[in-house]
Length: 192
Image 1 (spheres, rainbow, N blue to C red):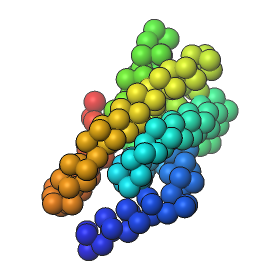
Image 2: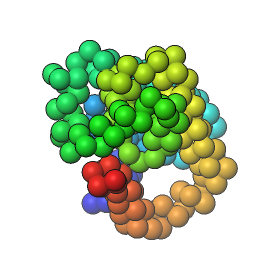
Image 3: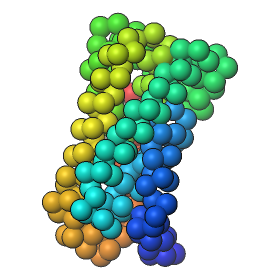
Image 4: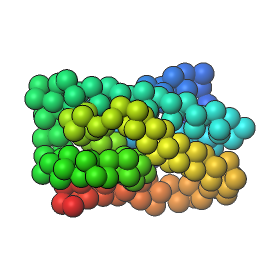
């Protein structure tokens, strides 16, 4: 079953709709969707290593654009939309601490949190609620998301074939580690 899902994901990653799908996921992940774009960015880069930089650029740009939606949710719709999203993730106490830290460390919070498995939507929503400078938010998001996606693309471009071989030989280990990282990000968020 796992092998079938892996081969289907690679087939999707090589399809003509892959870029649009990844862009949509990247956009939505920055504001409301709990699925990170890495699940398509990685197989797309492995399937098309010559397009690694273009894939990372699209992922970065759509993530930053989606971040504006998260920012708007926090700024305009916190009570109606933002609070339920944060409550769904059991993140209200983390949100309050994050909001208080924005006054002094806002840019660094966006950059550092954007590099971790902690859902980026929490940072974008908190930025809007804190009424953080939109220019600073944009620049910090560009730095953070560029570092994350271009570093991943660079590693896959450089070590792509060995990475692909490793994944294919140890598929259960890799998927378990990816699931653990995703769950770990939510747990860190909840208990940090």
